[in-house]
Image (cartoon, rainbow, N blue to C red; front, side, top):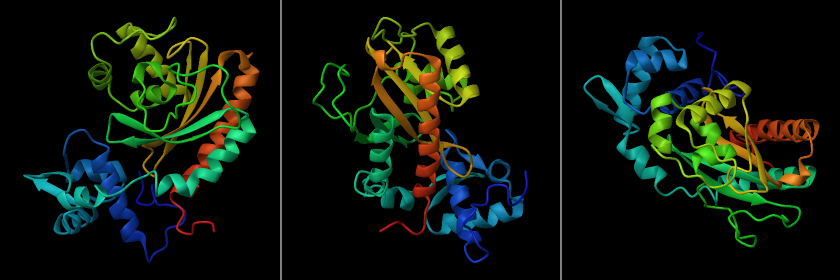
Length: 271
């Protein structure tokens, strides 16, 4: 792993230290346990000495906390983040892109933002028309703010694919709920499904959250390759008639995810 392997394409020598500090924060945030300097160094591909200096500065500013020789996200970062509302900031920033994707697909599109290691919150929902088959039997109710069971949602499967097997078991519990005719509830089958999702890079459900509902989801990742959000299409099953149709829509979603990633981290928002 090289020193510049995770460097953003837009970074210059003037802001490289800021970009590296952000990488440190993302590495620490992506771990379920505190990390030592060497572990952070390996995660971001920087020399240990450079990583230590970054951690020291971040600790002085309250952006990381140190206990012994390990680091976790800091008290002041938590204080600042507490006042952030993604529905006001990020959602407004990317709404036109998500709306355009809904028009291109002719289906409802949602954008979910990752919250910590184990949760995804729907922050945007755009649709070109009313979905004929309801989700959770509430066709008029927005999906924004809802949390879907990880084992029975396309976005949830993407999140589970980021976790270790024992973490997956902790998240879904010993007896996952059967919500529809094809909900996967067997622990071994769930693990196999999540491995498949991780290998192919996208998730889907088919009669798993609710009979008659199909959903397709792709991840949006940060500069370290960690999923920070998920883009999904929710559609009545009868409108996905074959693999070719699905693959066409998957391509549109993937292209949309790439556009959204650029917009997430753009320093010059469009007017």
